[in-house]
Length: 68
Image 1 (cartoon, rainbow, N blue to C red):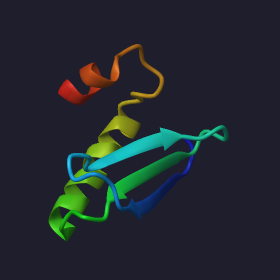
Image 2 (cartoon, rainbow, N blue to C red; image 1 turned 90 degrees about the vertical axis):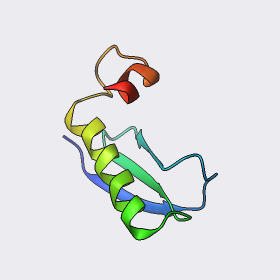
Image 3 (cartoon, one colour; image 1 turned 180 degrees about the vertical axis):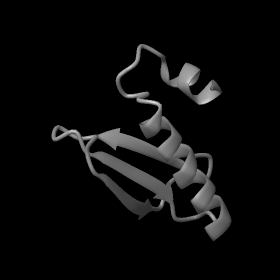
Image 4 (tube, rainbow, N blue to C red; image 1 turned 45 degrees about the horizontal axis):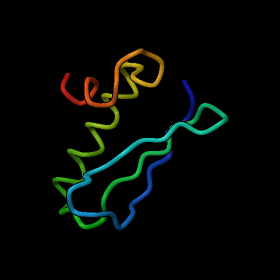
C-alpha cells in the first residue's frame, strides 16, 4: 500500500472528502475544511475505509463503493 497524504481543502459543502490515487500509488485524501473538527474526522475515517477495502482496485462503481 502506498502512503496516505491528507490535505484540508475548501470544497462545496455537499462534499465531505475524497481520495485520489496518484501515479506513484499514494493516496491523496482531501477533507473539506468547511466541516467542523468532528465531521472532518468522520470524513477522514470514511476515506480510510475506502483505502483499506481496496476500493481503488475492485470493479465497484463509485456509488456502489459509497453504499457499502
